[in-house]
Length: 482
Image (cartoon, rainbow, N blue to C red; front, top):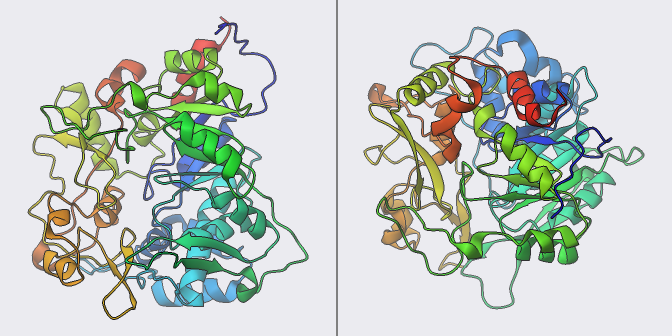
């Protein structure tokens, strides 16, 4: 392809999408900082309802959550959440967090409204005081909260929705419906259903007092995909408009798509990817939709190369994950950046640890104090539970990372439990909201990063700290004059 990109022509789309790193790493502070630089700041909607109530139980330092809650169009919901969860002085030492009820197919109205509120708060704060673009990232696989999450984000005026970890074919139609405050429906993945029988997730804004006289902004929808085949299918068969794609390669952090074809592992036990896992960019360009490259492109050279093959830009996670504004606990950032500088940090693609069945990038570091197989299994958040029809004909829920006896009792094969970790609890520990367990054994973190983590100092120098604005300036440096 002709590599004659002109960096100084007016652009319809952001050059840089800040990755939607899970469970509070891509928080409102980070997304706002990126949006203030004119690029797409993205908040993570994953587990955001639990994050909100834990921020409140820790005293809501700075009053930011309460300030946004005061803007939520259902003041009675904000009042109820404050009554239940806000602790002005924070929790006492050793006091565990109070939990939200786990999601089910038909969660009650208040549970859905708390999810709406949490997504509203995060997007509202990210958009506060500027006109830069803000998006939200959700996991297709985490089905049950998604419709309430989308509606809450749309109430706050979210500009983009990004979704991976599955095939989000029905999300565009749901966005169309929610923009009109109309009922939205998703097929619900339930194991053990008879052939031809389907279950659904339903969300009706009318049940929550929606003002149908004021339509909402329908955000642009960008599925996160790994193959041109899936992109072509979504472009033609999704239930509504698809506005572009993020093509995520295996070096990206978090969940990776499994390799196409038979699973083969290298000598480190990692999945081996091949030519079938590389998208045909000519077929992508033929779709006529903007696309962004992700995974292994988080550098000034990576942005330039992406633009030269016709991409609208790049999505970058790892560089932003360790900047000052990200939600990672400060001590974890310092530990990892110091470990990288000393050559003591690695990244491994673990094919087993995620309960979702997707390969998951895990940061490794000697003496890092991360979650391991010795953790006593507890399932009290349940975001990665899957639904199934039990022998009594009723819907039930299980997770291969829950206590093994519970999983097997529910009909799960014991082999599915081997090597699994509890991502729900570990990812909250990553951001300083880990649960307090008995006998002083608190939840430990489990970090994920892209392969580029081990070379992060090459991009940003030997500095011990840096800001989101530094990342944006660095990435743009390769396409600026002078």
